[in-house]
Length: 307
Image (tube, rainbow, N blue to C red; front, side, top):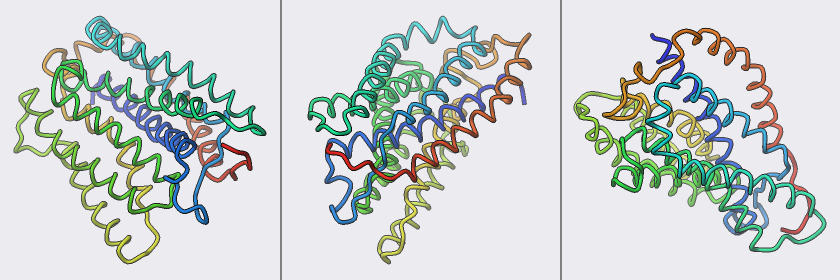
């Protein structure tokens, strides 16, 4: 395996971790705005909201900087096409950070509806802007220029909602249905996305296998729900969200930008790749701390305050 492949795997893992974490944040913002989505009041599940959720941005920063450093030869090609979508994401990132602090320090006061709406929109805009950039890598076009791009953006939105509500809601039927639609969109997007780069639709790809396994897990979840047993859909959704960036980007291998830019041509860190990769591996303890904090946040009791 080349340094370029190894780098892409590590970066995909970082973005996958960020995708799951930020989806849970989106679920929190959604249930803050619409508490009924959390389920009946008597057994409604809500996660505590604190500024500690900003730990998720560590994975985003590592992934973004790592991409810029390791695939520097492709920056001119990629940045010109995704600048507009990423600009929206960075503005949303700053907006979300300010709103997060405001909401947290208004614990004893009711937060207005428009603040909650803005908070939800900024939470969604950040990952969706990066999904738009990813759609360019996968199709070779900005997402609004192709049907496949729109499908991938829809899949990203459904994934955020599925994972977010899975961790913030007791309404298993709603979550299972969202999960099912998400997988259906992915199943429909797979052949279209592969066709864009001349892929052989008869050959198994990481994404095709990924969707197949996801479908089997969905079936198991549906059977579990019908038997009124404890639903494990949240873990299924989280696994799919984590693997999605890795499976998607390797379904167009050996391209970095489908049909336009070869992975090895874009890789500009031949001389210093071992140093950068060593640095990323050295950051694993920090990533482990991030997982620990994330686990603590999932178990943190909800503060008794009006929302």
